[in-house]
View 1 (cartoon, rainbow, N blue to C red):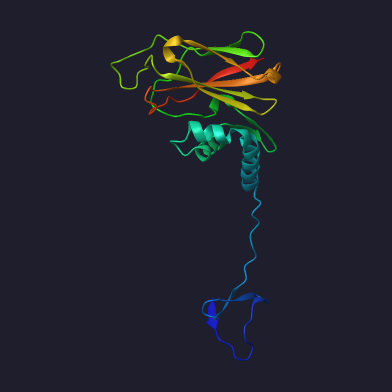
View 2: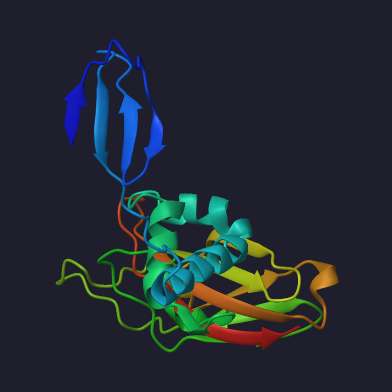
Length: 213
């Protein structure tokens, strides 16, 4: 690269044979450097990444508010997006899909749920159950009976999601959620996480399973 001042040619710019010239706005100096052909940015790996990114933006469109709430301590939607991109996309371009069991909606050190089950009862009502006999006052991260139960449902057909916080206490062992009437006959994915009574600590979210309404 070379700098030069030319009273003969004045300001020059653009490509000149094997060189390209430009003028620095602040100093007014002209710079001449060797032209190098740009490399093709569309490698197979880059195309795959861009395709995944576009797929995920579309998939998570209706989950932005939910993730901003449930993952707010981690950075909200942006953190959730990164976790899904890293762990939950399966398949190859252009046939991507989501592994629902690997979606992350909450992270924390409170004891996670066990014995999880979700079943349709009547109409569009779903009953969720979990183990309510693993309480401990001796361990710092042990399950506590007063913890709030939080449920997340996602409709595969309408691409809508529901977040119900504090639907029950952990001690109850069960909770029922009535989904919208127009969700009837649709497939619904479900997750659960727990929150300490003071609201300061969550458990990791866990995938419960799929239910047909």
